[in-house]
Image (cartoon, rainbow, N blue to C red; front, side, top):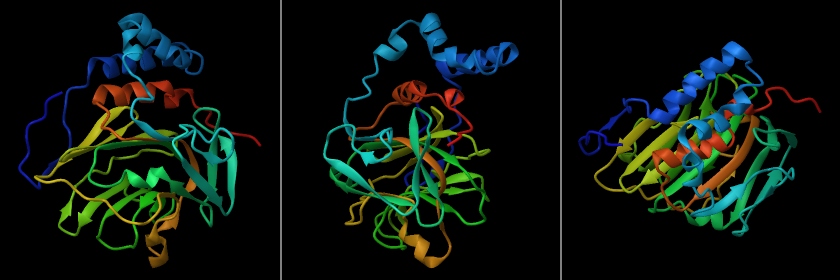
Length: 285
């Protein structure tokens, strides 16, 4: 899908016609609501295959370029891709209903996950795709640290993603320095239900997706170097120390990292593996 080329250093919100598959998905959702909002929605992926053929899913290899995958289905943070990463659960991290099987519930107080291994080698100048599901359990005044890889709460070599209920967005900081960054990548987030988020870095472009749809794109004349020695983490941004951020309170699930930039179609297909409509909204221990 083509975009008008913005000026270097400028940014814009994507304003594009909805692709055929997402438009059909929305129509199927409306149809399912009229019939049965619970039973019919689970049939959406099957109906897409019926309407468009098996090629809708068969063309997407979810393991191509996958360098880290945390399903959290074993109530820990083992790397299901077998690529040599591992997450250490710290504080009050519990097993909870995820978007697919189990996820990790963080209490917003001291719960966090700190990762070691190869996952920390891919946030440099290269292309990547980061994907995960999240479900907030509280609406705090302060931003809540979701995913972070930054050494300090400054402007140098920053990847920091936070749930901001006040601004109704997933604040996405992606920068090498104060004046070398991707502008306005933060997608709007409505409600506290399950959401799928993806961040794609492709050359001089960065894009964010929510529930399979492109919502933000930013471009620079030159790329951004994220290289730092800090570990990749969940709920553990160094900006917590400033008092202006809190740890994430909620559930996170199905975290993936690819060493390539997934296309818009691949992001949709990745999302349709576990559409949020199929997620269990309430979980009883």
